[in-house]
Image 1: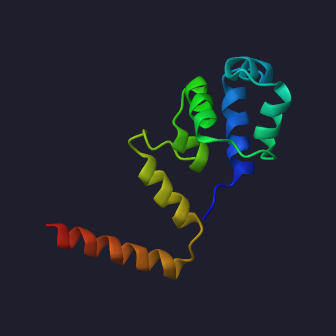
Image 2: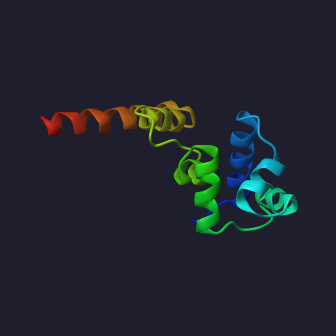
Length: 109
């Protein structure tokens, strides 16, 4: 599975807006043009690792959060991921997941 640059760009834009910052602010911090930032946020241009690290630092988040949309630094992130999976499952799949979880706990004792 490859990186979805469109989603990565959307996450960058969302985080930037949450901080009340502009594309111009980000462009200045990175030493690039506003047009380049716009291309990154639209997923038109692939971002390199160095630039991604700089963007993540400027936004105050991890690279993984921008790439996956999951903040793995949060203690409850796995619970949220499991809940998201459950929302996509039918009842049969949920019962199977529950049985697997019970077996895991039983064997861990």
